[in-house]
Image (tube, rainbow, N blue to C red; front, side, top):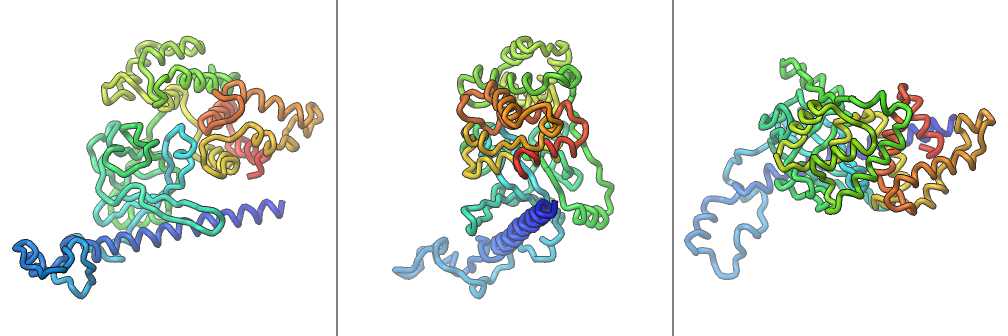
Length: 397
């Protein structure tokens, strides 16, 4: 118990150090960009000379010439101060994706109250000692791309645990795996509550939360067979998806629900489709469809699922060999083993059999398949702590 407590405290300290490193990098980037890197720094005389071809031979163009603050004679319109940038809300987020490499990215975002802009940075770890902090979404004022608030700029009320932030993929320099979807959706998984309280107090405005409610139509039906049905659905969708782009047609979804005896009333299905297919392309991301019809585990639970998978997939390839799953899975503290009703080998074999049956490749487990397993398991477990213990015990997290 003492070892577990020390381990948990060490992890908390490491997580806080990561966030502090990101905060420092954001401040450096934004202050540098506002003052040193602003194109308005060029002195008027130099610009005029270059425009009229009066610059002496061998002199580098202004765009590549080294400039310092001493050469600046123009007050920039975008100048930001440290005090202005300090009024910010920090939040952690994740990409809603079935790709393990993308789903496990460590993203930390900031919403700046001074101009209602936001930015998202990615913390990356290379080995034990080398780290890097890079912009994922550049600082700017962004609007909702989907849902009831489409077209409206983000404000303080849009940030709460479980909120979705949507961006057009084409507008950002994103990894190719993310750009396959026309919209990037980030899920807020935690926020700085102290900063939120301070900003709400200073803004003098009442913060209104817009919670997205999943329909939960089939949760009672799935309470007894959730794991096999959800994993089976995932496998079925991946087999039908010939283009491997994560999108399927309306007809394909209807057929899948019929195959797994999950019929949804026609009126409910049509209403749901109108909401999901807002681009009118007759294709919808099947991960998004599953979440809308069945619902999904809360962010507290999902954080532990991601933590367990990241421990297995330490190279962040998006898949884990089944042999590694067997090596790492420990059934010693399983309730049936403790009660003497089953052996460790029987529990391990049962787990691997259930997991392997629904994997596209029986020799490895993708992040999507791993998440599907615990998504189905989560349906029948009401208490968050019980669910977390089911993850802690076998994976040692």
